[in-house]
Length: 481
Ligand SMILES: Nc1ncnc2c1ncn2[C@@H]1O[C@H](COP(=O)(O)OP(=O)(O)O)[C@@H](O)[C@H]1O
Ligand SMILES: [Mg+2]
Picture 1 (cartoon, protein in one colour):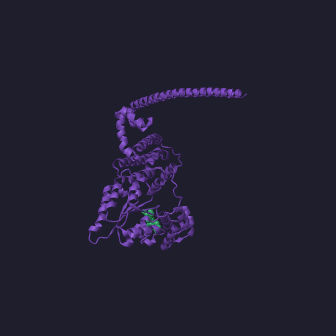
Picture 2: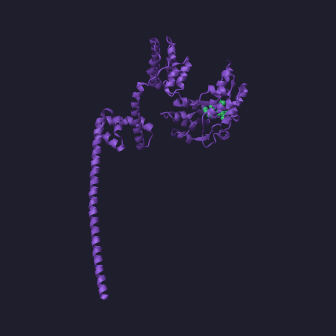
Picture 3: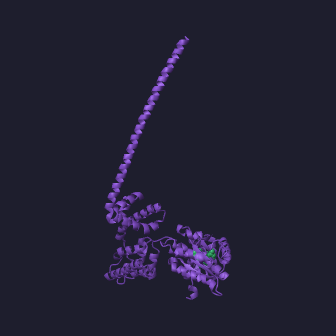
């Protein structure tokens, strides 16, 4: 296989010129205008947004190529540390200081990746970069509407990309087929395009998988090769695929396609290895692989070294799948898998997490801040108060409107004491309120008495008045006579 053939088609067929970016005319015009005017623009950055695989990154690359910019590119995974962004800022700034240096565009690809993170350091650094950089800053995002991205939206020209139509996708696929000399059935292209839901990256990858694998692209092949997208395997399917994998990549794929994350998968494996394998040495090998994965996962959490994740996943997938050496037939045995006991226990800690989230929400609304800040900054502080100063804690709890469950969580070992004061205060408050209510009722009944008396008087008065009137009427009557 030549190197040329191995090149992913999404790279090989990436637009080299702006004109090759299909069906994004509005976005292209807006972007080019902004770029040509820079730095005489109202917003120093642009944010290109739209669904995946519709040409956002491609447009930036094509424009850089066409207009002779050097592209200083960064991916979401690099935004984690402030120092990385500062390094990019320096590279971008060098455009002005170096004689003859190429002008530059800084591309921060998929900035929405930072929205989910707790630390705001990356975001701060990007804002700083936008403010000071001597080069245009271009950002891309699938979903730019997360509240945490608001500061970026505020300083950026927003340029929307459209979801590509089935027609657009087919047009590009057809062109690639021609270029590769592939025989393609129109219906196959339609099938691939439909399934891609406008994601050209996915469609091109599918086309390449079939085209390179079979030398032609037919509807039958497309149907057979491409399973419906977005259907994740349940835990039972995952285990079956993982144990029965003949190659390491198949075992890894089982986890990739699963609903289970690796922590959950670890527990399902722990529970079920002994159901699948029977030979003692096979069992030992499988458990050994799983425990290594567990050690790596633990280290990742402690050291934040995510490079270890690949080893952990290899161990728990391929390591477990390749363990059945003495009795390989066990791999294909039909087994009724059992639900991990540990997960049943965990559903209880889930409750704890839910209460913690509730506390954060209640307090955040009082303090007008985010739940993330409450969790990281306020709750630890409350923990201290609740464990050391139960009276004060009880008053706070009442003031904040916390429930008894929330108090228990915050007070931990001191919970009975805090709850005692809490109930006492609450009772006091209630008795005060009750007393006040009683006074009010008394006052009301007093008033009622006055009111009744007044009514009586009125009645009496009107009665006498009526009597008087009758009397005068009668006298008048008799007088006439
Ligand atoms: N509008 C488009 N015109 C031409 N090719 C496109 C278009 N959108 C996507 N592609 C193709 O799909 C691949 C992924 O596109 P990319 O620009 O990276 O998508 P994203 O919008 O997610 O940044 C590119 O390599 C390119 O070949
Ligand atoms: Mg992209």
